Length: 334
View (cartoon, rainbow, N blue to C red):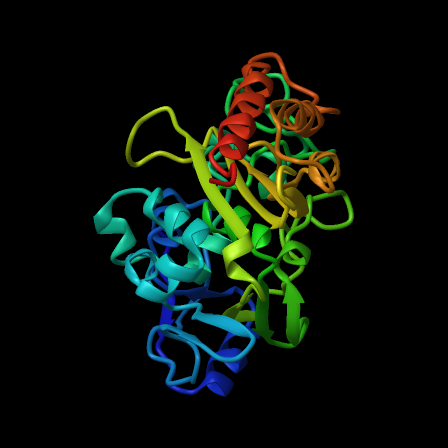
């Protein structure tokens, strides 16, 4: 591990000032970043711990008239166990419960989970300079790619690893950000981007920008909204998603003898692209229709339309299709 300086400011202004220094990096729970330091895939000059910040809204879960507000330093364990989250945002509680093992969830933070780096074995190898680390090529394109992307066009085909991100995007969440490059609230979906030749960054945030809080809109008619988060893994614990699905549907009440129809629909996939992947064609296939077997089949086919598998990951197409069907069937109105 390379030597670095360490700072633990108490005021947000001081943290932002320190993060503007060349080679500075923010540190929250550290469950991802510290592994990168040990492997030398990240070699910052300065680590700025945000755990000491005395900033309102950074920790805990609370609600106001419009939002459930989640501090970026809230741990995953707090999130999954919080009664407000379990009652009003069950998709998010389900997603948090699937992250790693309890020891990690007691330390890892919401903000850290949203901002973690890819788990591609080429990126994580200390002696491989892949494209994402400034090299000339993505070795996964012609190498071992059974865990890699089937959607999206990018010189890097590593998939986005967060479990919380698909769930929060399905819930139309926003991030409250402060910093020199991004300031204010933006839709969480807009936080992520596919790396390209103009920028190898995987988010729109600059190096000195910080997520302070996640804002999740409260449904106006919660009894008509149903949602679920499902995750397929290679192992039952301590594993990242091979494919995940966050689904949220609202239903319009049906008259006597007429089945309820889907009003709004959100279907967000994880483990299949370099960012959380919104299956918009599948959403469109569901809107305005009763949630019949035929509608579910149409949505599942639409969810995998346009997939471009590599040599070793074509199985993800069928797995995605099956997981979408399972998710939607679990949302059938009683």
